[in-house]
Amino acid sequence: MEKNIKTRLKFLIMFSCILFAGGSGFAKDKNIDISVGDITFPEKVYLNQKATVDIVLTNNSDVDVKDCKLNIEADDGSKVSSAVPLPKNASQKVELQWVPQRQGKINFKVTLVPPKGIQVTDEKNTQATKTIEVLAQ
Image (cartoon, rainbow, N blue to C red; front, top):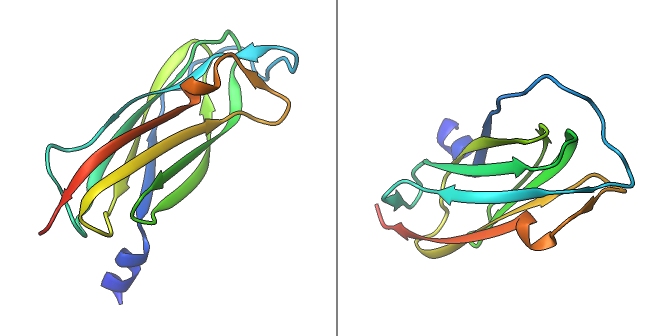
């Protein structure tokens, strides 16, 4: 039964965030500068084996963004979505455990979606895609 549960769980998210003291909330009429940075994988990723994926998220604005939505999607059918705080003028690393469900080249797409009513300075910066080769066991 434990193996069945592990098979269904395609993503386990573990956030390692450093939260900074500062102002709370944000101005609705202000554009924010948030971005998805590097997406890194282990040197080799194997089918049905856990791989740690690191994603760098940055908020270059002078306001905290509390409930930014982080969407992660891979070509193997894996999807996850979670709210993530983005402290002002800071970068943070999000670490997740991914279990690939098929071998071959897989596109791994990460998107940040700001809270309703908040505009971003450049939509292109809120998305990043990386292709990874998943090897047979």
